[in-house]
Image (cartoon, rainbow, N blue to C red; front, side, top):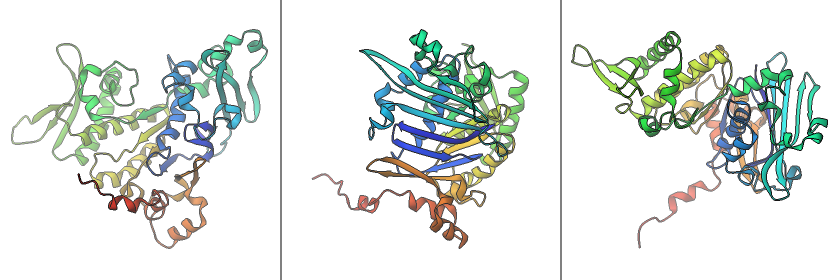
Length: 387
């Protein structure tokens, strides 16, 4: 199963957006166009369905309804924020549809409530809220059915699929700060990344580490091995060995790793991890801190993960990543910023773009200029010298 379409109404920078989503989706656009906001809409569904999550916490973690609702269109969609996903596969892309709209409760109460929640199975409605139970007990509307085991029985596979989503935007400085480890469950910036690795059963963890090591030996000069150890306080650490003049090699932990090495470990581990669950993995600019030649290989690495069942949705500014011949225009979403919020289209829908690609240009050469900020050339003429 995978996400086959995504629809956003009144969500952050998006007034109205509906896009198809393939096994791989690469999102490009100017800074502040909404690339991260698009990924966050899927994270939001993950946060609804995941352990310890729910509507109140998911909205609250994003700063409240005022920070989630589109600033361009507060009255759009009656002021409700809506997120809708279709789930399925190539043979049955609309197997499931989950739609949620929510709003402020009003009457001076600082809570978010469900406006509508609809689940369809092959087009047949299996849940349609508010229902009679909600009318009898309005407090129920402070929670989605997605987060309630008793309420999602008929579509639990949807809840489990969304809850398994992995989001990755590792910050090397956070990973190195072991005092943060474990302070925030499933921290996308890496606060508990090593702890999550260590929590995997030993036999499985060692098998995954061997697969990651094989890749690192190719990408990182003199890299020999990767393991997890614990210090005297019981905190887990990454430990690597590099080949050098010493017969036993040189050992390093995460405090010694380069930013690129840490980010590459996180990317490779997440791809190995998510294949077993067959869930989406969301990547923010995976090219950061990596050598361009390694970046050029990322599409091939991602393609191998996709064969294992992973769905990959990523943001990028990298021409090296987009220049790979395996990247097709049907996989690239171009975001455009206008006076009425951000809109987007799949590059393959642009006939001029397709003509350029058929003439021999790469997706990077065709797509990235379409995502450049208007008038960016003026940046070079700005005088920043002190007067």
